[in-house]
Length: 347
Image (cartoon, rainbow, N blue to C red; front, top):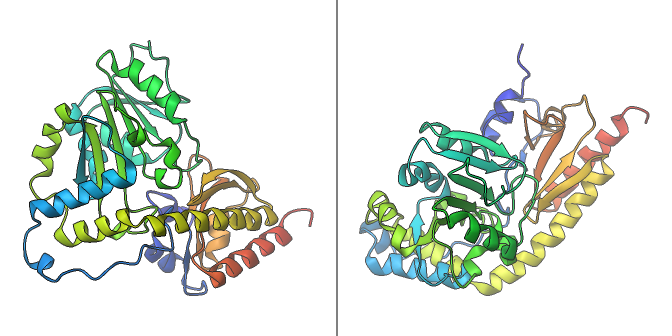
């Protein structure tokens, strides 16, 4: 018989509906810690009702891209293209860059990257680190920076040096910066120039907590932007999404305050997990990767307490914890971790 939580372990986090079905006896409301989405979402402003009744105007798209450039940076000669969520951009990468390429994905990371390439006939292999720039056996390298789920990061200067050498031979480098809002010092978009052959992905879903808005960006050299524009069309995101996302990106006071809050919440979360006998392995200010005791399924144990966390089939004793949203959520997690520690062998 398959374990009761297998459906939760597979695929993305956020499957609270499946957790409720599989654990009907669990206390409610469920606490969803299975994603890296900021639980303190940007407060959505009022939107002009007219934007729901008309197609997005050119000025709506321009305001959004200008706001993204102000928030992220925009290297000289770089196009910043809105997309309806970075997940779609990941799926379009093989379409735009070409199928059946030789692709290396750095580290254990977001599974959609490998899946998108494999579905188009590419040869995909994992890489423990960035390859030697002189390597000739790959056409594309994919890096998530900072990485999900362990938070591993490559400093901007080192990554730029690699990018210059790697793309100089006509190869491609994909850098997914979905979590870079909490580590802006890593972002390639703050550089003066983006090497040709580099594609950078950004997302509003994680740091701004607006995953349902479905807004992200693709940054590429302007000369490489036309294939993206053709596939994304004239209205890549909705008018209301343009307005809300632009407001969030331009709100520097909110961004500064939120970075401080998330850093404090991460420290508190690490303390709770350590107190429950877990070993902290890494993370970012939006999630923590921890290791539990061998032979015990903490996804199952915590689900009985109405707490959903992300497990990984390939490393069954490692778990990713998102940030609790409020004091009751922190308290319930702390109580559950104390129970885990009390039930550990030898206690």
